[in-house]
Image (cartoon, rainbow, N blue to C red; front, side, top):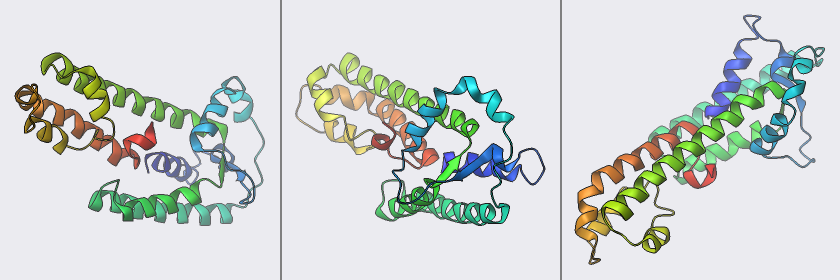
Length: 210
């Protein structure tokens, strides 16, 4: 949803003549063709950044504005449904994933203008940076402060990045570091809540972002 929010905001600028349709969209992908992932498209666009000025000066794509409006109206509706599901059920819920899948299926056939990929690629990099920072924080709390063996942390934490019961379970366990985990449990859960907020913002689970 975050990437779609950005794209919809860009599309809305067409009405105020701050954008041309060709600044946002250059065509539609054929459903029969291979559709690269958004990240793959973003990386491809990143490699062509030196051509951005030429792209900005390109002629209008000649796309039908009525068809474009219909596609973006549908995109907006699907995006709103996905965001409501995230707010109600959380990102990992089956219903939410169904809405996100429907949104992704519609979004992936829009052939975006190269200038749209840069902010998307930056958003992905920022999300990954935040994940790494919070994971390092949790690792330091567990290994350095609670004296959990590194091998235990590596084996136990992956998959529980947003599971606030994870530290609680360890604190109630019989391992030598259980009592120490109980002390740092609030700090661990604070980092996990930040990751949960990231999931809600992006509409992706931590594993999907990675």
